[in-house]
Length: 55
Image (cartoon, rainbow, N blue to C red; front, side):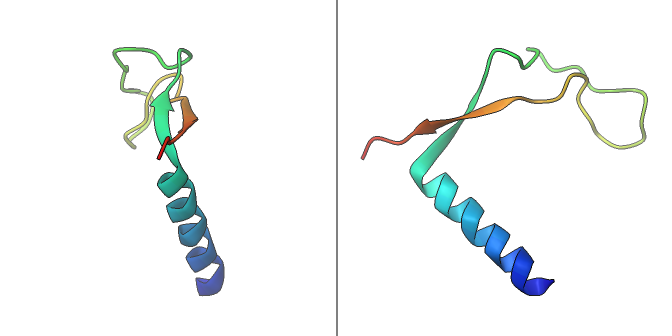
């Protein structure tokens, strides 16, 4: 299990080093916090896209 978590972290670092996260048009702005749960969640979710970094 620890090995799998480490591999996921490496994958995230690899992706974030090559791409920028970008909020796409499906995301509701301003975000609405859900009142249906005890957890901090956003109604409709947060939609993100990847934009390749130009180096």
